[in-house]
Length: 83
Image 1 (cartoon, one colour):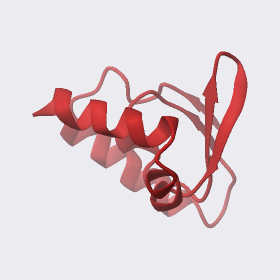
Image 2 (cartoon, rainbow, N blue to C red):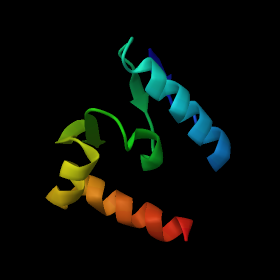
Image 3 (tube, rainbow, N blue to C red):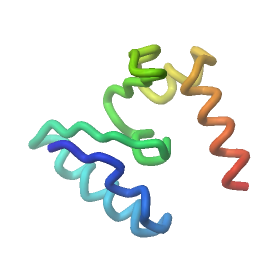
């Protein structure tokens, strides 16, 4: 299943409902999610970070935060903008 910005126009509550439904499908199907909102991919098995069309990082949410690269910077920026 390919989801391209599937939750971008949703409010936070609706986004959580969609993500919860996707979590239940995780065991039965592979899905690829394209997202700018990190909350959409935070529980993904593998997150691939692209910059200018190239893969620059790959890993779990925790590993990418610890690496303090592009993903970590985006996470900090989104956290600031949400507050």
